[in-house]
Length: 247
Image 1 (spheres, helix red, strand yellow):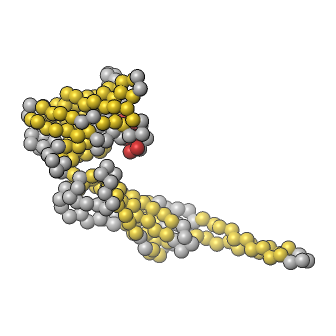
Image 2: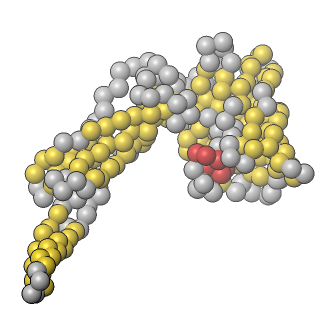
Image 3: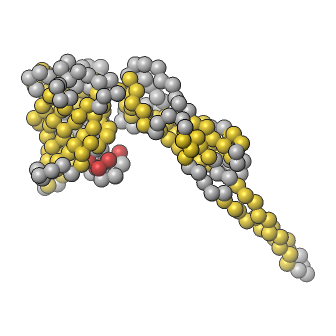
């Protein structure tokens, strides 16, 4: 268990003003309000097996040592579900809220990745870290960015949460409004590295991305491919290597 969001008590000054035709009397009243303190059970990031029950480790909150109520809500980041669904691969963001007696709110959160790791022989779905080289520089700009999800669609195709490996979202720290969603992969023959791809774009920035050259190494648990992003008259090449994460 760890305690987070420890706040220093906030002193608020309440001033009552009484006016009369003869004088101006003022009375100052000071009071201490305590923001919610949260005790966070479990990890702030959890990788969870697709299709198995999930038990939230939980969060408790207190105000000046007394327990107060906590509410929570969850939403899917990439597939936009309104609750955590153990049968749908996604990154789920759970937010825990508490309000003190004076109406001051506090919140903490955790991310739960619901995923299934394929064997990279029959399936490429899974959870990965990403190493990205942009425009052919001699060394990666970002390494071991986490996490990227590949999920399997009902029609047998695969989809990638961020096709440029988290370059802008996690590497640059811009957030998930700058991911490249929508890369749908048809695996014609995984062992022969025979794939076809849909075009996609970088969210917010726009442009067009073309994927090519996907190579799967089941022994090394890696997937490598090239994304060429055209925006205006400029082309950026992202050489992405995904490494499957054991959990």
